[in-house]
Length: 487
Image (cartoon, rainbow, N blue to C red; front, side, top):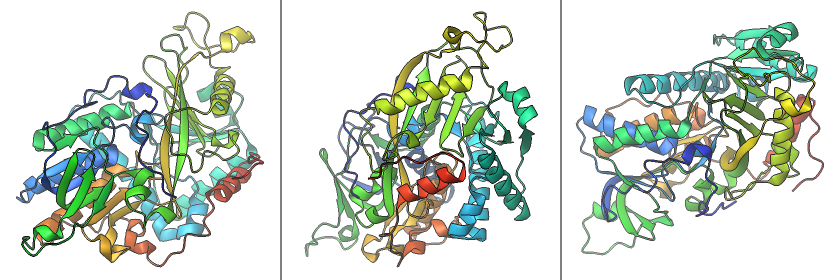
């Protein structure tokens, strides 16, 4: 489907309330040309800019780089998520093996863990203040069916010789660590909580110092090859015309970091991608008692929560509380009130045995007083994810799918896992572009998971893909009745 352009008046997430790059334009006028144009300024676009400029300097390849953003910087999914970096670890391991094969599943699992380590290295190197808390994430199970599924996936990952840190908690250990009797088991995996937009702004600030030209509020409406005239320089004739309401930028290379909106500028990708709206609520700051020092994911990743240093709780997920599970929705200008109500109920249920007495410095205690077990909601927002037909990202040169797209690249379709995927994907795309700009194999690119390449999808017919059916199947695996109404 064609998701259109990002909505011009989206909701403001908590993360974006104080954006230092909100209306940044490096030059008052749009540059008329560039070696590379990047479209989109989330973690993928920012990382692509940073890596391109750093690598170009390293191999001494001159590079003019322009980044175009339809709205404010980091206004897409990265600026609207739940504030986690949760590598996929063992989640869905058996299902992923059945869908993509053991080799791709192992490669993807290791790739995400390495991406998180790469982000941590960037944060340390540049002393980024983004409220980083590398306290791990607990995949918690309320249902014995879900617990059996998670344990089977963990065994399969270990049998495949994927050795990642893991703590396994039984029901008693869940009561000890989560202070709740709601959970029958859990595994704690490496993961982080952070202010995601602050990370992206820091990446962009480094890239700006390296020479990036960032143009916000400049939506790209079309990327085409303009007609060739006899008087044109043959080199210029190969350029792409990147059209915006503010003018046209001619560029030899274009990197699409538009995630859920990729199908609008790239109709060749539209059959393989679906926008899916996610929704998040935030509790009142300071008035919320101390709950957990780590992130929590439950219902096999459909739901997630974490607590910030000011005790604000971020809670998201529960797409299964709506008939269409928000599939095909690309509008982040409004919330689904049905989900707001479901989030309130679920958060209060989850927190009820972790809520402290009025003096929140004391240890949390169980209480039967319903008034003291209510978490006040301060804010709610939505963000648009991009799901692909094979649950894998699209990364690399698009002429691998369609020869007419030579010198265009994708770094999109992160299937809700953009934080542990996009930064490293963007680095590898940057190396691909440097090699093509220079006409030489200066940098290696073989560390990309081969199944992520657009060329790996050549000849694949996505017409039978039914994302709702996939979601329903996963819900049934963990004992949650799927929505009764279908699109």
